[in-house]
Length: 148
Image 1 (cartoon, helix red, strand yellow):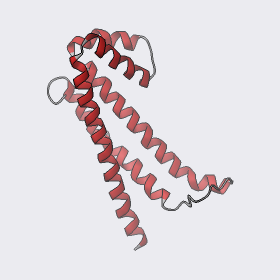
Image 2 (cartoon, helix red, strand yellow):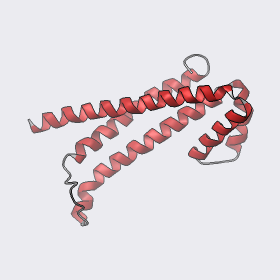
Image 3 (cartoon, rainbow, N blue to C red):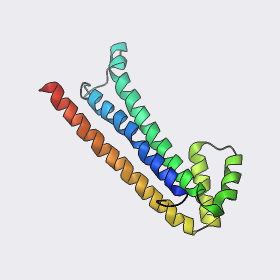
């Protein structure tokens, strides 16, 4: 992952963390103005909540896309898995099903790859946790500046 063919996937994963921080920071800042004690089922209520929900949706979508793409690219970087990757991609599955199929193929054809998959998952999770804390800190700083 840090050397060889997996470097590109790892660097691309790290590069894609910045937009995730941005979307989560915006969602946290936008949630500060919402009254979450009760739902307001009116046009104005939807208008108030829409920016928050959209930013949160983009955050979850980008986290899912980034993690699955990183996992897929890390598995595909292995020379022994290239044939299996081609077979899985030829099936035309969706992104999450492709990732699951690639992990299953790794287990079946190259068990050592599972250790790499676990390492990649740990790195991805560390990235998501880092994004959360960076976004939280950015949102707190923004809110302090706004209300002081």
